[in-house]
Image (cartoon, rainbow, N blue to C red):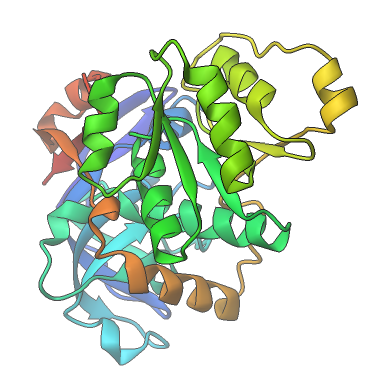
Length: 327
């Protein structure tokens, strides 16, 4: 079978490798589609050395497909089912990564999809669904009642919107333009603010006070994170998840910390998880209950064949679409 394998820093090649057989606690899937995430590019660049490579250095964290074989210990409900995959939830030395025609994955790295959906629509969905689910668990335990999300049109931003709707948690989604507001209106967003609006800052401050929003899910960083921090009520926490602003520095006056008692902490979907069987089963069951919501579907910007993976890795979406690989 064909598989995309890592050969060095930010370097891959298409190889022919054996089709895997099922092993204990693992499923073999026939891959339908593989979404390329920012994390995939970071891993290829060597920025995530703590994440072990899969067997034969097959790349990829996310995909969707159909289970064609199961090993001992895998519940019988998995065989023949459509699934979404996020291979980083459960570490496994038997993993044969997902950018391949057939993949072998620990079953606790998968979520069962409804039978009536097209699994290709979930090629990069599970990582975002899990991120949203874990984040809300964390902030609810911390006593927050409403959240602010920067990068509102991103895949994770849309997933957080869906998870908040499912749990009746108010969310303020931040976008750049009126076009972003129009996009989120398709996903039933209620509170959306555009940074291009000249009244963005006072509107955000007013809406945070009205809803009691004291938690920020920040995937942007830089100047926007500073602007959002200035609008937050006292005692708020900014959870730093991404850096779409690139090298742009985060700057704010120290009085924000002194007078408003703001907290900046990092958030990682993997860090807070105790990756035992019971915890992951509970997490994945919660995700499976809501993953059919439209906010969790992967928005495909452009589809690439395995033979054009280099082009796919270099492609930049003009909007919120994602590069998707298909065998």
